[in-house]
Length: 183
Image 1 (cartoon, rainbow, N blue to C red):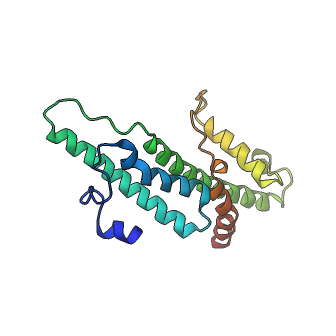
Image 2 (image 1 turned 120 degrees about the vertical axis):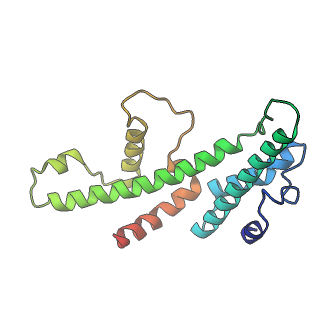
Image 3 (image 1 turned 90 degrees about the vertical axis):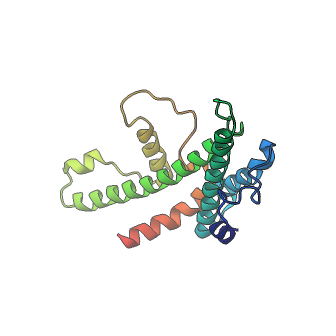
């Protein structure tokens, strides 16, 4: 499917990909199914990447079709995008991936800071970056800290923690090991 999308772009072949239908559910059904598959059922990183690329290209094709319909129409009102929140779901999934990588990087920095602070038990770095033995709990604390990073009380309507995606939880340990070996 990914190879087909690479050869036959959804913005050029919108009818073939089902993006020109007048029924929103038929236009967004495949996209929604692939987002759900990415979020819940992927067991392989490469498959996750392919599904995410397919969803991104098809969503861009859907936007293009809607914009072209609005441009061809005589009304000044831009067509509304489908009521299904596929755009929100796609952005949320990508924010969860970013959150996973941020957690991996900061976890590595904390462990590096702890290895340097072993020489001096009174190191200010050790006091600033306490390390918990439970990695899931430390990731949850870090995610909470990220959500209040700006210092203002922003209530997020969606949880961007990668811990909310069973696929990303499945990948977290292997990505963490790969990242630590790389560094």
